Amino acid sequence: MANIHNMTFLKEKIDTLKEEGLYKELVTLEGPNESECIINGKKVINLSSNNYLGFANHPRLKQAAIDAINLYGAGAGAVRPIVGNMKIHDELEQILARFKREEAVLVFQSGFNCNAGTIQAVTEEGDLIISDELNHASIIDGARLSKAKKTTFKHSDMDDLERILKENKDKYKKMLIITDGVFSMDGDIAKLPEIVELAEKYKAMTYVDDAHASGVLGENGRGTVDHFDLHGRVDFTIGTLSKAIGVVGGYVAGKKVTIEWLINRGRPFLFSTALPPAVVGACIEAIKMLMESSEYTDRLWENATYFKKNIKDCGFDIGQSQTPITPIIIGDESKTKDFSKKLFEKGVFVSPIVFPTVPKGTGRVRCMITAGHSKDQLDKAVDIISQVGKEMKVI
Ligand SMILES: *Cc1c(COP(=O)(O)O)cnc(C)c1O
Image 1 (tube, rainbow, N blue to C red):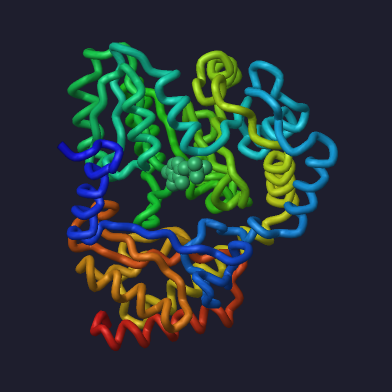
Image 2: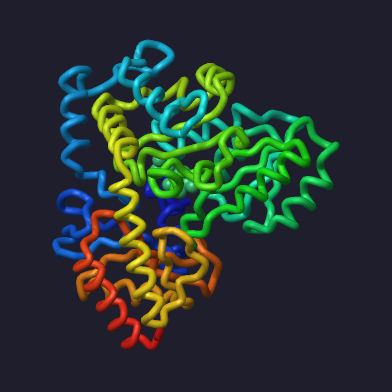
């Protein structure tokens, strides 16, 4: 028998990934994540970050991080329920609650952690979780940790959602509908007004994960609930501090009682160390910047609208996108990867996204437009994408 410590079982699985074209390797950034950056030694226009507002390397965030280190140190020193809860953590939650126009907020160490902790804490045996089939991996994992029964509805299909609600309304103690606010692979927005109406009709709770809407949709980036003016009608709003906010972290916004419960029963909150002061300080500064001015979100949308129009005019298929997420649908998996490779050679970095992240035959390069891109960079990117598109007969 082979020596188990050789990890042959992993090598075999990796070989299978390679055969199926699903093997991933990391690229390395030499310097900050900006609209133009150095990747694997090459200067390229970056169309793949979630740094929507250009905050990741913003001088105000960096200064706030340094100030927080000077006041509170490099680490929090404990989980928050023991002795890691600093004044700066409370301040972040207070400003987030005001920003989100909700009663209260609880911050977790990441958006992933937030879903992993919250879903299992607010559901139990005898409940039903009803999840959009395209929801993010952290929602899927979060639901797996719950003792509730789980089912999915077809992506944004309100008839399918209503069918499930109708069939199950008397069978469970509680029902919880979960949806992404903005779907990350297509850039479409959840039909939140319809979901909320159905939830109210069938007495279900609602849970929106606004990772790609935080800092993007709604007044100055307040999210999908604000975008659709549904304040007070969504039970759990999840936001991330890792994408548009430019740092790292996640939060739940909702009723005071929800936050009280999660302080007692949110497992990543209870058992994983508090976010470091630098992160918290930078996040507070980012939220202040959004509350002060619409300058950043305005520039994001102006850039996104400009880029999407020009890409569409070239004849590319950008699917159902309603947000700065701009998929350019290529189709075939290996063609998609070649497309991305050719773009990189010409100076544009856009990572390919293929099955199983998206359905077979819908491979795409997903362009992420940010407030940090200059018109020049966007023009140059469109030029290169259109050149490669013609070369490869995509357009
Ligand atoms: C990115 C993402 C997360 C994870 O957020 P992190 O803060 O990066 O952990 C969770 N949910 C959705 C929908 C996401 O797109």
